Image (cartoon, rainbow, N blue to C red; front, side, top):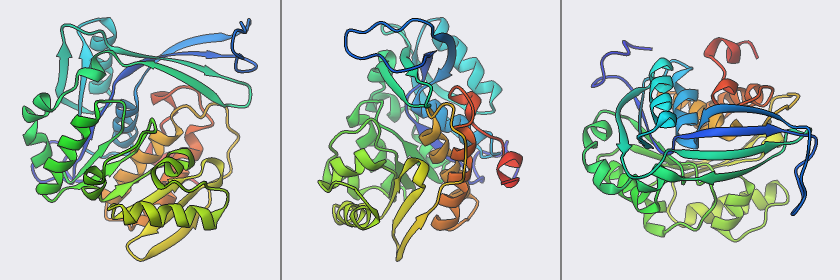
Length: 310
C-alpha cells in the first residue's frame, strides 16, 4: 500500500452508510413469536453495515473514508472514537442533535443463525444535503461502497454524483428493497445475497443456473457486474465477460452477523489493489470465512496476514 496520509493520490475507498451499536444475545434457539428464551449471553459491540464494511477494509490496510450520521450521545461519541482507532478517516462523520444513534438488537442461535431488529435513529437522517458538504470525499476516492440502512434518496444522490465523476459505485443492497433502474444504471457492481437477488430479478434462486438467470436479469436492468453471495456455498459472479462460481472456504461458524459486511469490505480492498473481479471475490470469500468463526461485527473482521495464511 502507498502512504496512507496522502488522501489525494491513494486508491481510496469511500464508504457511505450506517453506524449502529449492536446489542447481541447468544442463545440456544431464536425465539418464536410470543416466546421468551431464558439463558442467553449478552454483549455490546459497535456495528452498522456501513461501519462494519469500513472497518473490514481498513483492517486490510485500505485507506478508508467513512460518511455517516450518529446521535449526539454516548453511542455516537464511542463509535466515532473507535472508528478513528481502527484507522478510518472520520472527517465526514456528522452529528445529529435531534435523533439518537442507531442501535441493532441481534439474537444469535447455537447454529450461528441470527435475527436482527434495527432502530435507525440518526442513520435515517443522513440526507443528500449532508453529502453536498462531503463532495471532496467523493473526489478523493476511487470506489464508493454503500448499503441500504440509510435513506434511499441519499444512496441515489451519491451514486449519481460518483458516477458522473467516473468513480466505481458498489452497492450491497441490504436490507432488501426494490431499487430504481436509474440507481442500478449508476452501479459498477451490486452484491446481493440470494434473497436480495430474488427481489431484484423476480427469479427464485435454487441452483447455479437460476443464480445465473437472476444475475443476468439484474445486469439487464443496468448494473455492470453482479456478485451474488451464497453464504456457505460461496459466491456467483456475472458480468464483464465473467461467469464463475467461487466456492466458500471451509469454516466452523459461530456467528454470521457481519460476514456479508466483511465480504464487501474485503472485495473493495482487493479491487483497489488491482485484482480482477474473480480474484477479489475469492479474497473476499476467504475474509468472510474467517469472520464467521468469531463473535461480533468489527471483532470478526480479519487482518491481511490472517487471510494470506488460508
